[in-house]
Length: 403
Image (cartoon, rainbow, N blue to C red; front, side, top):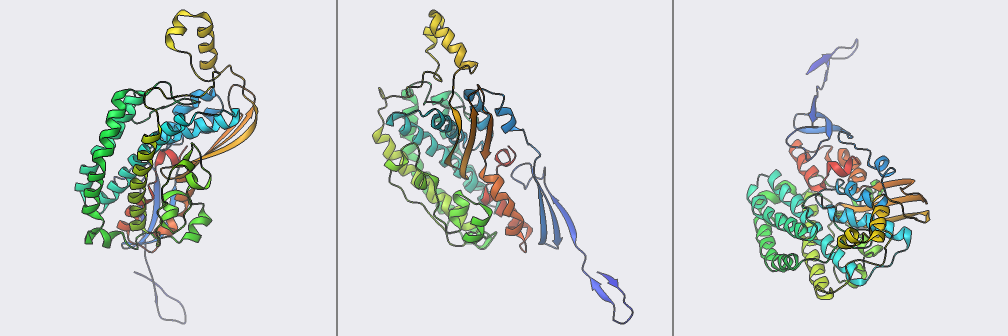
């Protein structure tokens, strides 16, 4: 403490604070972003976030790419659930060109998107466990995220940044090996998820570390623009799949889990229940799809590449292939907004078309970018260790934060 002397009063002690840089490359941060914290011992007095360390100008890049070639850009938003990003973009273009897809295609998309949601939540919840000192659950449950990636690999040949599907559906019929892996996942994953929950849900140390850590009330979360599990954990039952159904989500029965306190424990529990609900949705979709002969793409020849055998042997197919790849297809003039329920909330695409080969303007509504603004308020007055847990439970993905 230092002393400030005045003329007519006794010396007044002025409190000294410590400035702490949390990030951008600190092993405790979950991504490349910085928080400059004013600390009173272990208590956080103020925090100022800094973002933009991996800003890649995605929206500007999209203005120079044909519509079909923007899909790999969306992979690099929330790369923990890339297929949801991919299909959200495809649906946006389909809304612009007014394409109607067969039910079979929409159900296939639902299966992939819900597998992606499970993969995303596995990462988030297992890392929350790690940040409370419980490494066992992470090591055990992570093999199932790997198994989901194997399913993606069977479908499209890629794992993390998948570029899965095309405008209008999928590029090919799913192989039998993919269906076998999905069947095995549906059979075995529930037991593994239950065992993971047994390790943490009623664990006294885990509960003490997470309950009342990083809380936010529902009305305050709405003021910040929260969506997804972080909003539902605060008690608001908003889910894009129910409020504005897409890809035939209205055909499925599932519940929207909500919390009460909006703290780390609630966010953990909401994601846990969402994995069970995703399993329920996949189970229903598996009964609805035609695995062998069902349609895997809609009637959108302007965006769907002809079969390779035809391209090699037929001049018209070769010309069409070239036109699609180079983006020389007509699109309507207009503007559309389409949103999907991503792993972290409402992932929206605002697309403005002037009829050219590329978007005139494309804006990504990234849920991470919006709710990360509340982070300083959520950790103020708490311990530094709770700030790390809060960051984990918000699931701030740097790729989605800095588009």
